[in-house]
Image 1 (cartoon, rainbow, N blue to C red):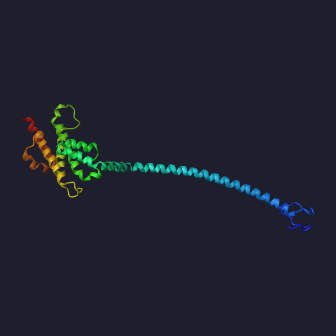
Image 2: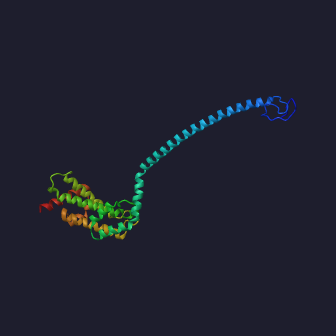
Image 3: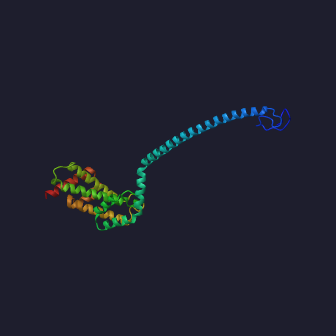
Length: 252
């Protein structure tokens, strides 16, 4: 810019002309404008920093709440699916030891130790698992066999105990039902898992059924002719037959 007095060159910051000493009117206005801008900048900067700080505080709080909410949802979902998770890892573990389990059960079956086989299946929780699903029906028969032996034991030792948690006729009725269940499981079902009634498994089933019938003859007094209709009788008639034959046996 030019000095209005001597036309010399001036800088906007020069308060006076360095040549003639005349005042520079633009310098005064420039200082006022810069002071104003500086104040506005400081105010704006302070506001921006405050807003940023407030935003960060809110962001941290929201993030913490979101994380806690996610953890709660995760914990809830885990709780809801805890059974499936346990089942998954159980099945996976059993699948890894499938051959070992089958070998041990087979060994017990070959020895005719059906109670031992049933207890092994129960103790290792392999009754209803996907990796050994083709053994489900055989394991079901083992379980029924175990129930039957328990019922027979309860009946023949009945008088040795003064207190009982159920009536004797209830035990006979349960025995009747378990006999029917075991027998029916030995009959191949249309919708059974593939391999459930393979030749070897069916042989084990028939052997368990034969052993069951032998127990009923020895301890319940059933006769050979009784088995021709035993499994076709209603629960009530089968129960009455068991009670009648047992009564005859202990009165001999």
